[in-house]
Length: 176
Picture (cartoon, rainbow, N blue to C red):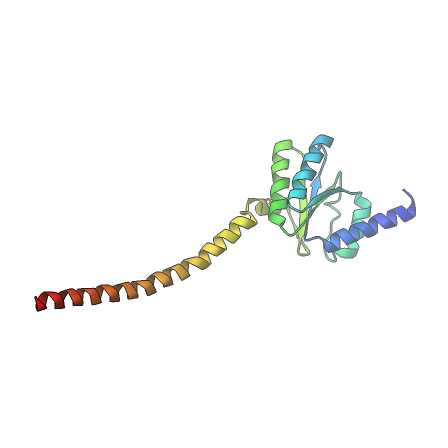
């Protein structure tokens, strides 16, 4: 690889590292080409993508972008990065599923909000409920107190109507 080509690759990796929401570093040994296509398709569905990298170039880029994070141990052996869109949980779920099913794409580490995550922490992301479930739970938790308030307020009105109706019936009986 020519020197300028290496510089361009390092600059490309720097941009990826700077602009990504989250990263998952994986060991892609054992990943067959047809499985890689399936993984890439699933990642596109969650607004993420897989990129196979050269460790030496990635290390140069990472030292410039991630100050205080040492990736020397992570960037050993066959390494690929999964660049997450806005939903790191969905990305981690896809990687976790393929890691179990294919016995490939073993998680080495992750980076989220400029913090190094160990493989267990990335697995915890995969076990979280999806964004839709969390939003549904949020809406339910917001709606519940409002529903209770509406029921209490309507009970007051309903009780007043029942009381007035009982008074009317009593007056009608007394008049007859």
